[in-house]
Image (tube, rainbow, N blue to C red; front, side, top):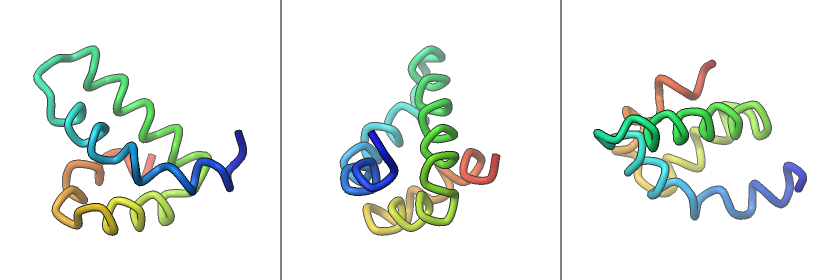
Length: 69
């Protein structure tokens, strides 16, 4: 899949990623962190941040540590 396809669907992943990033389950949390970092590499941190803001601006604090890696 390319950047264009991922951009069309990334917003659907954000609620699940946020849930996992806030989870007490370490495996789920690390997997979500790796996913966000990978999405930032593919899409760019600015685009990823924008998608998070569209879904729920309150989630920016959850995603912020992983948007600039």
